[in-house]
Length: 246
Image 1 (cartoon, rainbow, N blue to C red):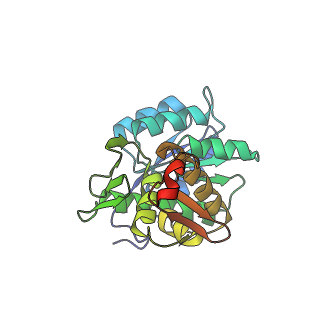
Image 2: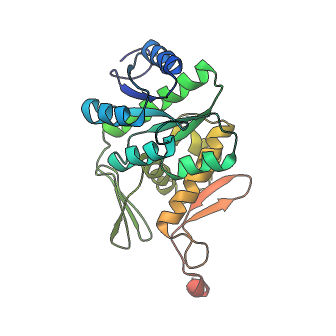
């Protein structure tokens, strides 16, 4: 195992239209013991993706000729589980939420500290390695939710649902602790590898996206319950009109 805690050298796709910044990112990634794959425009990034099969990607949102949101969506379409970290100089909350909603796993705001960026890349690399190594055979069931940990599939009421890597890990952790309230800090640490203010914001948006996929609207059914000031709790869905029978 290498000094960064990873068992092998991971390929990291780096996409930014500023050549100097791409070179800096490549240097930082190489120093971290990972293999950089650099591109300065979306088409080149997709060609590298298909040729080199990177383990994770770092994508700037301010690209040309099409922006980073489009590239993000296309990468997520081609690889539902590959961790994607976005770089943005945009301060607008809506841009961060939109990136996460399109399938980004995390974001770093420019200007960023080198240590912060490398720490986040390493955390995502570790998560990718754990996912790639598979897991002991296990099927988790909570109410109508059925999660196959080895096959990384989810069924709800017998229908297959498609989740991103972070959505899967978040739901898995909640299902493994379905009888308990899971603190937000513990969830962030397990799913993203660290707990800080940006990580907790990513938790919030990912939970919102997961609820939407589960049809968890708080009216007809509720799976993920927010415990204010504490965290989250997973419970079997209970139809509101039938709740008096429980």
